[in-house]
Length: 390
Ligand SMILES: Cc1ncc(C[n+]2csc(CCOP(=O)(O)OP(=O)(O)O)c2C)c(N)n1
Ligand SMILES: [Mg+2]
Image (cartoon, rainbow, N blue to C red):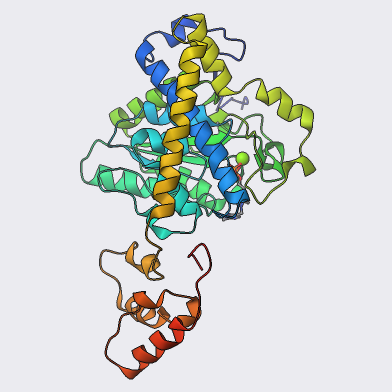
């Protein structure tokens, strides 16, 4: 029998606005209105400022670990811009620009990294899940949300974000498999930023692209320049249309770069080549978009100055709101999770309220028992940590 080829395929790479300012007018036509390009640029500047301040808050002991988003702003922002407001966003932890664009107040992200559960309590009406720190787990949540939506006959889709490193996790492959085989409307956005902490992306995937991982599950896949907001809008818009129309998932590999350390607990100079970082600085999505606007007389130094001042104020106000919120209660971790607390957790909630956790004695309920009075008395004799977060 002659040998037949049973599969021949290709993976496309989409780029519309390159690092030198060249713009593909055909692909980029009517993708984003002029007015919105300005708004997206302004938003990216605010997010960059947020990143700088969050970093400083950690360094000055006012916040816990923080993962900088610097350099990756176009990827989540372009994706979220291309979606409907009632499509699910299921993020990882480098998607602040997309989450803020959707309407999440900035202080929520600060509270999360301050260890305050209220930062994970997404306001009603915002279709998004809290940031997922366990790598890859959120991909399954997105699949579940899309499945539920399909079951209920809704036409909203789910978009989930994850890194190159996440594609080595079993959860990733289970999510892709479920989404493809159950015909679910999911847009998978892999932010390939070159590194999973100190492990280079090349070591996570020996195939020429990460995008082709979707292919193995029988779903559409595409690679794009993740630092090009126009390319992001195009690929996510196409994927969202396919998902809504035919309930088919798409795997997108957005090629980008993490300009900062993995988190504030990392020092990337120990494993990354300085020349590599310098090369990627030139591909910064903000520099690129600013050049695009300046070339079209839509931006100038005066506007930039006023935007920078405004960004400074917006971020300072968010920090103030986060720091001025009343100190969290130990029980917050129970109270944000279930509409109705299961019995087992209700018992844990009651017994966890001990003075040994450094609680504010005024938060302890006096249930009238001797035990609760003892607890209160013992808590009063202790002092809280300066930040009030124990
Ligand atoms: C299940 C799990 N394993 C390990 C970790 C520790 N960890 C935190 S971030 C990270 C690397 C993730 O890399 P990638 O998916 O590329 O995302 P990036 O941080 O580059 O955005 C690892 C291994 C974790 N958070 N969760
Ligand atoms: Mg990565």
